[in-house]
Image (cartoon, rainbow, N blue to C red; front, side, top):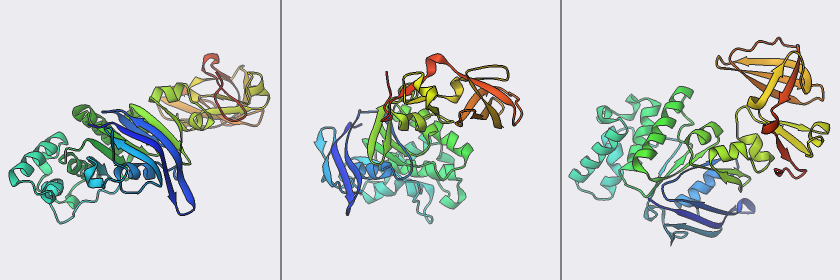
Amino acid sequence: MSAIELKNVQKRFGDVTIIPGLDLSIEDGEFVVFVGPSGCGKSTLLRLIAGLEDVSGGTISIDGRDVTQVSPAKRGLAMVFQSYALYPHMSVRANIGFPLKMAGQSKDAIARKVEAAAATLNLTDYLERRPRELSGGQRQRVAIGRAIVREPTGFLFDEPLSNLDAALRVNMRLELSELHQQLGTTMIYVTHDQIEAMTMADKIVVLNKGRVEQVGSPLELYRRPANLFVAGFIGSPRMNFLRGAGAQAHGADTLGFRPEHTLISTQSGALPGIAGVSEHLGSDTFIHVRLDSGEQVTARSIGDYRVAHGDRVWLTPEEGQLHRFDAEGRALA
């Protein structure tokens, strides 16, 4: 296992600064998720930790050892990519064991480690198959198995589930979380999907334009976002925002409240508006409302809630669930 420390890490490509200067501590055995919109620098940051990109400034340490100039192979980390990068002509057994073969390990040692990894990942029955005979989820497990046999001190995952369909992504999320519980190894996981971040992470790092907006547990970020960016990024559907008189009445430049903390009524309430599209999901209904003030907001109702498009409705945010932000977008106490 490993603790990873980044101090003033910077990355530039020519005159373009991707990461202007970043400090971050990852504890031994943590499952940390880097999340943010496309282009925020999360994959670049992961590649810097792996050693696949050179830093433009700052230092990276693993277990107290400065590895800033150390080659990827000597950092003790294993990386799993979005593309499975399997050898199509090799069996699953040969794909998983390939890094051990390149390292010159004995056939007995390779066989033992491959069997153990296959058992962990439920791949034992597929060891003699070729990648083309596997599903997307099985191929991803083979790629993870190839990382496991190296017995790394940490795993780096670069959007490993983005090529899978929705049902497989749910299954693989559970499998990766279970794998972390079994191995107890430090894992860093990159995704643009905040649901993956919320369900898998011990700690989330929210990135925006190469800067850390907030670090914390999923529920810390959900309950106490540090600023408007985090408030709007964490949570699905996103947080509602009001400006103008509605926010000023609460001593804020912007007032935020989540759809799940918004009561809807056809009789009365704090915020009048007109119902738009309703999304019926069975367990929940999301009603999109155009307020009389002009803002578009969303309310969540449990179960199958019926309101017709164009109906007059009133919304009332729960008083204890309001988020206030100043003119700079920072959360107010």
